[in-house]
Amino acid sequence: MRDRLEASSGLWLRRWTVRDAQSVLAAFADPVMRYQVSEPVASLDAAYRWLTHQSDQWDSGEGFAFAAVDAMDVVLGNAAVRVVDQRHRTGWVSYWTTTTSRNKGIASKACRSLARWSFDEPGLFRLELGHRINNPASCRVAKAAGFAVEGIERQKLEYDGVRFDVERHGRLATDTDPTMPV
Image 1: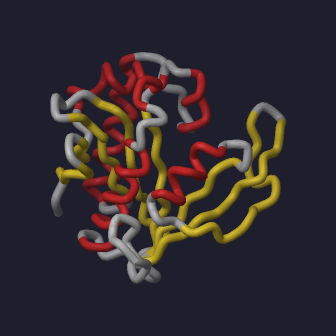
Image 2: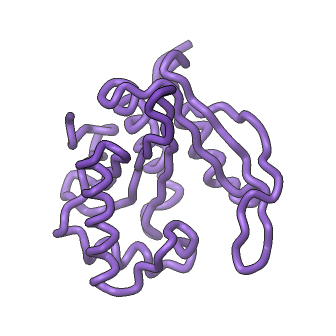
Image 3: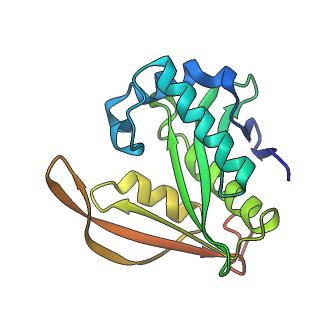
């Protein structure tokens, strides 16, 4: 299975490695990243644990996380798919970008590339993702990556005692690729 692919000119997706620990630690130092993980990544040891988890998921075929990097191999973000239902070939997509990489189209390009890879390599048919409805930037990423809005899951998430609605998006292997003219 390919573990490196070109997402767009100057943007690559590659498998995470232990040499990315400092970049992971720096990314998770951003308060916006607080809810992206179940265990805080607040130390170099925690960054190594996060990277080890990504590697273990990859090796087991349960999930595939890619570092989004530029031509100089600087980490700009993450695009990942977790296989949630092998029988029905369904995956759950997640993504994030570093503070300096936001609002540049990196997440949507990475997600488009990840989706195509997910359909071609592990053979998934349906990809899903969700975002808090108070996160319009994440919604723009999902739509730009070809994920159709499928509905609202009421009060699905709870952070610091506050419940949030989640907008669900889906993309099928048979959907028109968003980079291709209709």
